[in-house]
Amino acid sequence: MRPVIVRVFATLRQVIGSKTIEVARSDGTTIRHVLDEVVARYPAMGAELFNDKGQLHNYVHVFVNGRDVRYLEHLLETPIREQDEVELFPAVGGGLVR
Image (cartoon, rainbow, N blue to C red; front, side, top):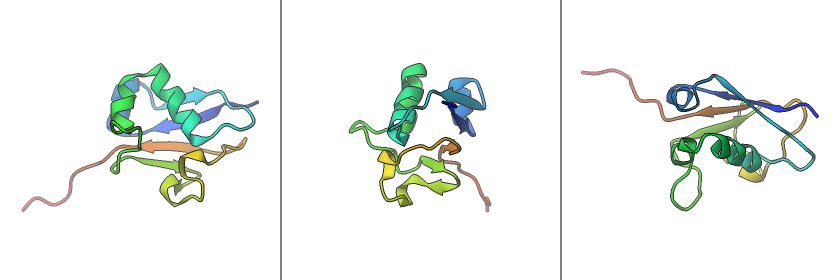
C-alpha cells in the first residue's frame, strides 16, 4: 500500500526538520494512527499536537483533503484512504500591529 504523505507547516517543520513525513498505511488506518506515528518518530510533536488529556490542541489544525478533521463525522477516527492528503498546521499569529 502507498504510504500517507503528511505535509507539515510553519513551526512544526522545525520540530521534524522536514516539510513532509511518510507514514505507512494499511486497511483501517485512521487520522489518530497517523498522528500517533508522527509522535512516535518525533516525540516533541506530542506536546505540539496534543494536550495532557490526549486531545488535539484547539489551535492545531489537521486537514484531510483540505477539510479540518474537527468537521469530519469521525474526527480523529476518520479512516485514511489511498489518495488522502494530510496536512498539519500549528497556530499562526500575526496580523496588523497598531
